Length: 225
Image (cartoon, rainbow, N blue to C red):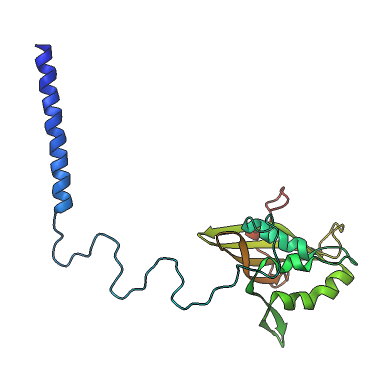
């Protein structure tokens, strides 16, 4: 008698399994009501393909043979690239900067943006990395300039990254107190091999008019990013 009960239960299990399969097949072959949108993600007629490919005839972006080769460590991550930027422009008076290291971090068509007061209003202006070098070389190397990151916020998706980097400025790296602060907003892109700076927007802190918000400053009791 126990043997018959086991066989009976096994038969019920098989029938139950067949029932589940039958229901699944029925659901898979069920017709959608007239006018119901398709349940598979289809592009509308005429929509360009979404595959990440260059359109026909598009010129290359020109990163294959950069003029200034970057150190692999400098461009291994978005964070490393940002730190290499700070290191390349910082130093005491009388010390030449490694401007080729600076140049190696940027896309060929990269831009740097800020705004300065003129006649009571902020006027945006843009620089290429080379114009930044020409504008700041004498000042940085003659008087000394040290720019160091004190905290950062990183957002990343796919091949792009945004680094919101708060910095302090000093005349000399050995100075205890900073004379100024600001925020650099880095936009970076990864080409499959390395990270590149596509653009930088920056502004300096004006304590009376635009102090840096607390969320962009280090947490009390901590140091560094």
